[in-house]
Length: 109
Image: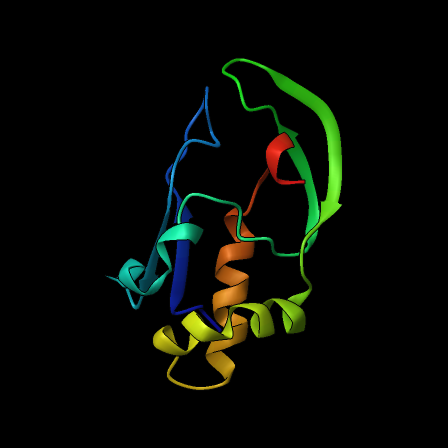
């Protein structure tokens, strides 16, 4: 099943952590429903992440296992997820969309 939600991160090399989330539902942008304070930070989905340093051209050779597993992430973000979702099944799809491009920096672990 193809996910109707897409969450892209605009940050690019050499400062991949400087960006913002763009969220789409059926290819229509719905970023306006994502709270402003969450647009420029990691999404905090669960996984193992390469950690970026918060200064240009510095890479940190370490990995961190961090974030909320799907049920906890949905509970933590339900107040804004309800604005994007048409049904309860959409919450998992939104989580997976963010997880695909989630990241960590030394500031956010």
